[in-house]
Structures are given as C-alpha cells and as structure tokens.
Length: 234
Image 1 (tube, rainbow, N blue to C red):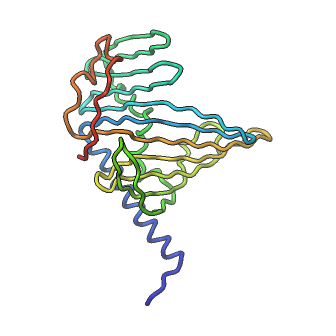
Image 2 (image 1 turned 90 degrees about the vertical axis):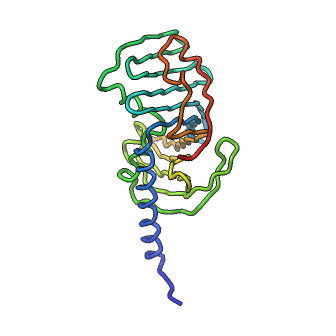
C-alpha cells in the first residue's frame, strides 16, 4: 500500500477544487436566464459584542438585457432596479423615490452589485482553493448535495478596513452552481480588532426556463411583484 504525504493530498485537493470552481464559473456564465432568491447576513464582533444584519434579495436575468435586482431590508423597505430591455426602473419604497429611464450600455453592470455576481469569476479570483469535502444543505426545504471549497478571499470582496479573509462556497453537485457562501474576515482600526462574517444563502432558484411575465416589468407597480420561485436544475 502506498501512503500519500499530506502535501501530496493537499495538492490533489487543490487540483480538484480548481476544477470544481472552473465548472461553477462556467455553469453560471452559460445561463441564458435565471432567478435566485435568498438572504445576505452580515455579523461583526468587536470586544465580544456581535451585531447582525439580514437582507433579502432577488436577482434575475434573461438574455440579452433583462434584469431584476431587489433588496428587501427589514426596517428600510425595498430597493429595486429592474430593466425590461428598453427601460430601467429604479425604486426605493422608504423614500418613495421612483424613476424610469431608457437603458444604456452600462445597464447590465447593475448585476455586478448583486450578492451572487462574484460566483461567475471564482475560477479566476479564488486563491489557494482546497476541497474540504461534501455536505448537504437545505435549499427551499430540499436537501442539496454539495462540494465545499475553501480559499483565501479575494481583495475585491473585502470591505473597507478588512485586512484578510477566508471564503467557503457550497457547489451543487448536480447543477455546478454555487448555492451558499461564507466569508470570515478580520479588520483593524487603531487598537480595535473586529471579526466579521458574511453569509449568502440561496433559498430558491430557477435557471434556463420561463420566468414570471411581470418579473422584468418597469410599470409603476413592478416593485410589488411577489416572486413565484421554483427550484429546478438546468
């Protein structure tokens, strides 16, 4: 029997991890339409005291130029940007701000601020990835078997003041899509040291299928859309 050294095993894990992240990036980039709904949770611990915020999100896209990005704040109303391919509607319920303008060449860049946008570039941005094993997570009440990858957090995903971070992603074995991400960070300000944690979860998703007719509507009532998500593969 041949025994492999920890270094060799680590190299094998890294190779597998890179291949999985490449598959995940390609899976996301190849989508012609998608809708993801979930939560983004942030926790900060300073001096033993932890603060926590939770925001719901909806991200949807239909090629070539329809999109919806919505954030649902527990105490600050909803923030919505939606494009039907011709017009962009921007609405904030707490301030009652609403404007509808023609789309521009930069309209699709709106998606770059979504919680899941970074998933499509993980093959390029994940530093020193390692395969940590398999784990089943809950997605909309259904068990999903995933591969867990850990890597050093890319600087572009760090918040101001954060000096380093470690990321984990859960990649669906069936679809190749990332369905959960956890980022643990450290930050220093003077003599104060804080620990942060950000968790992005997917509660439901639908890809490469028919989406609700009004999902990309820029009519005044578009912000009232209640997503009828469905969890299916590809």
